[in-house]
Amino acid sequence: METLADGVPSTKIPFNRPHTTGDEFGYIQEAIDNLHLSGNGPFTELCSQWLAQQLGSPRALLTFSCSSALEMAMLVADVGPGDEVIVPSYTFPTTAGAVALRGAVPVFVDIRPDTLNLDERLIEEAITPRTRAIVPVHYAGVACDMDAIRVLAERHALAVIEDAAQGISAAYRDAPLGAIGDLGCLSFHETKNLTCGEGGALLVNRPEWIERAEILQEKGTNRSQFLRGQVDKYTWVDLGSSFLTSEINAAFLWAQIQHSAEILERRMAIWSAYHERFAALERDGLLRRPTIPAGRTHNAHMYYLLLPTRAERDRFIERLGAQRIEAHFHYIPLHSSTAGRRFGRAPLELPVSEDTSDTLVRLPLFLGMTPADVERVCVAVEDAMAPARVPSRPPLCTGRQAFKRAPRSRARQ
Ligand SMILES: Cc1ncc(COP(=O)(O)O)c(C=O)c1O
Image (cartoon, rainbow, N blue to C red; front, side):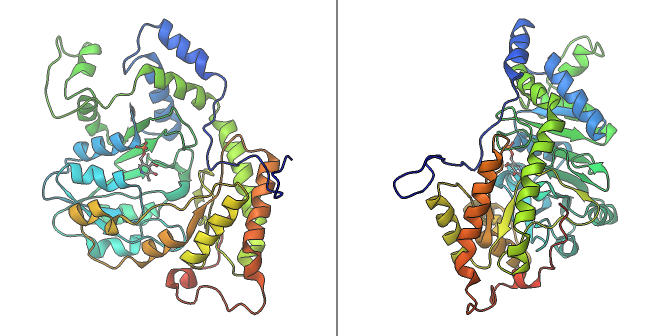
């Protein structure tokens, strides 16, 4: 390995590098030859049918992002002004932004300290007569407790809208993520397991909502019915927008879909190598690894570590940076964000969201990583933790409740 003057490797390991399968250009050329570049053409149909069949949803609609799928989902579920929707605070802004765009209020609830998913034990306390829906976010491709969430939703007649942006190929008790709730939203952004640059899908799991979802996606018109010969002209019939993705993107995504099993396998190998390697650091109480509870099949979307304190996490990122390895923290809790305070409400304390935001770090995980890259990250992590091994050091994270309370990891390899 080439090194700089100070012995640091000259090549940088980025946090993510988008991967291509080699088939993308061929399919894009085919889309061009098809003379159909706008949405809902042959490649869109292939991808939609694959998603519906593979995930077990009655209808999958390709969108230009998961954010747009979330916006469509709020429209389909009829979320409107004055309504409330329960979302985790520890999530991507558009999980809540899609609610606020409808003039409704995102109600922020804390996450569990083990999976970092919406804490189902806290949801009921946040439900009011105005609550319309719950949005479980499957963080890092590890499922929320969907049984508990469905029971609550049924008891209070609420819609369940899964934010499965990170959840393709992952499952809860063998049910693919995104196809469990009433609606499911997927992302094909370049950081996701399957990508087309920017892309997403809405899974419409209630057959009676399909027709309206198609209208909303097609700019509020009944064009889909017209193309199927069900009406003799198409016109503006409802709310809607252009939520479609182009055939160029769908062609790109089709190439990725063809290789999805191999992509999953290769990501899983990297995830497992990290997980095995950091077991000793967790045993020594220096950090926590991801927890995968029984009944969950994860998809190796992300590998994160939880350090005892924010200062240690920040120092850890700096140390990896000094070795030319890019590691990142993740979400700023939405209840404390500018827009979260303006549009949302947080009826309960959110200590785990705040603690996780301070202490979580994500490691590089992308398909082009070589075994040597993985080894380099592992060594850098061990070196970065080395000062923490000094025996006189007091036990970790005295003031961090979430860290102390968390059960020992039962993560599977
Ligand atoms: C949990 C979650 N929801 C929504 C999104 C938005 O996805 P997109 O970039 O496809 O709009 C992301 C993106 O990373 C995400 O992680």
